[in-house]
Image (cartoon, rainbow, N blue to C red; front, side, top):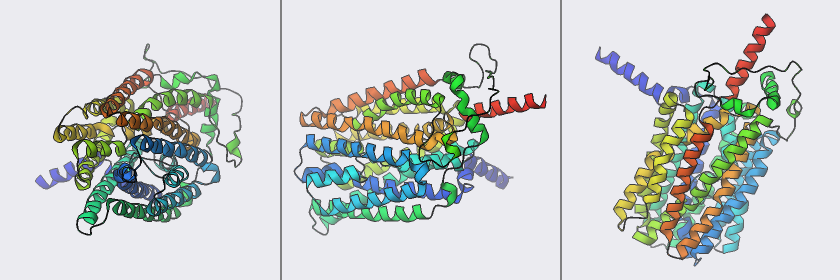
Length: 487
């Protein structure tokens, strides 16, 4: 009996954590998750020492902030171009091009110390000042995972995709921190030389990512739109807000299922009927996209104010923490953030995607605002750890939410556009932080960031409480038309 109970408990736990879903996913899905781990490992390693490296080169805090902002501006341009045309040009080609740019950026940082050369490498290449996603990869991978994953397990696949990214960041940070300290202590390297070695590793990981991109199959490329999806473009005649009617798929006032009158005319043919590099986005999606873009811009601007690079710089300048200790601290926070994604997946099954996004993200915003208040390192480190407990729990539900409210053939373009909006908004943050740091007012940056993030959470709840999945609406529409035809 005890053995049976253990097996049942183990099976339940694997189901709750989404392990069955991940193990049963396609080969391409596993390769995409592995690519994310490798990429975020590189980002985590470089982010830990990016601001410190620029400071050692004699660059002022204000110019460091400008450097980070220009990096994000360059990412906006590259991401917009590559993701907007990714489905038309080929997702694998774009991923390989991005990996090549990532390798080139690492090599420039490893061999050059000229400020403007580094700026150019960060603008036209791929360097992350935040330790988070940058470049065209995320939107393309999320769109591909949405295509490869059934709706029922999509949030679990995204949870593990996010978890592996956070785990990669954690491993990159602790490896970088202790490797830099070891090179300086035992080998007598200067800090600048040790930092350049990290960027050499960064370039090598870009090559690994390039190989993984080559290994993707044809299944990762976009599918032609289905007839039901083409009919969904007729939502021109339906208010977009009808897609956001109720969390429980019922009308909020009457409890009745919302009705849609299908258009009797044939579904219009879209540009995707023929091969085209230009995406087609329905009017209903544009309405939802506008609302989400406004909200995401506030959250991303706050993230730009308190990037991981600035937070490591804050702990170094205020509390004089060595690189090894910094690496361990951010390894701990990243691992906690990674594991929290599995909890988010379980919670979202019970209370829905939107409520999970808001109720997990709000506490992290509060703890972020509290980080600069203590005068000693330990309380500040505890606030950072507490923030990490719920900091990323909104990511997988948000990815699944965004995938649900747009049509399948729109996802790459929409997710790319959203990432461009987020990065563009984030790019203004580092300049503000650099200016405040130069005035010895670093603590104000944390307060502004926490307040903006809390406001984003509350606004998201108010505007999108009760949403309808586009796939669900399309399924109901097709079912109604079938029943009418049979009648």
